[in-house]
Length: 301
Image 1 (spheres, one colour):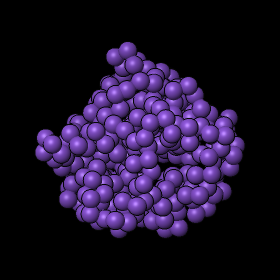
Image 2 (tube, rainbow, N blue to C red):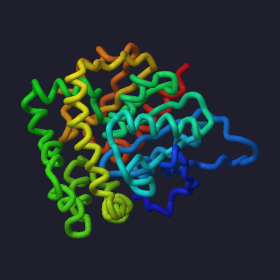
Image 3 (cartoon, rainbow, N blue to C red):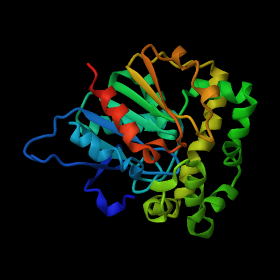
Image 4 (tube, one colour):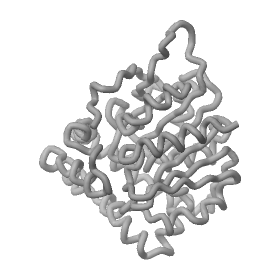
């Protein structure tokens, strides 16, 4: 179990066009001069924040990387306020990369952060060195599954529920957000890393004024964006950055068989890393396996 105070990180705000993005990083042991280590940019998913990567930050730092874990738009200490469409969110990532003073980053994303990472790698390839996505399908794969796979459509019921006004916000914040903890443990095969104390930062995040609506705004914008992309006949450019897709096989929301095979159509250099006996929040439930695969992949020439 890990508590918020166990992780020694530096908190910083990036001002990107008047919009503030909060992120944490690890200061180098030898703090003299700029940190010129290769950057790993960690993008969290729903309903999380930078704390999503609590088991990766120290491991990546020790492996020789400059770790940047932001709160994405609408989450935790970053500014609230849309729009929450993928182009806007990707522009946030590009602006943050520029703020960091680097040309390229190793981009890692889980859940919605994974969806954003796919979008950035496809539409802004000049800022992505390597891509790692954890339990999030390529957007085109997800759209295809929702129209062709009844099983995945049933698994995705919550996405349609989140389109409703007011009620989803009340569900997230009901009973002081205790349903968040129940959700984590229900989705895990091994709930050891999901104690009340360890999940407290996520619950505090959801209960912030305006946070629930902001977080749900990602889902609501996704439906509108998907329809608009179909109307325009948009097709994702092929991703040419070396890519690893990490997938916990026991994800109750996102089925492996419906969403993983076929991803190679959108990526020229793809590796799939399945993790057995693990639920959706893979980087927290099985951090040692994830860290081994992640560090080995990033270190490849």
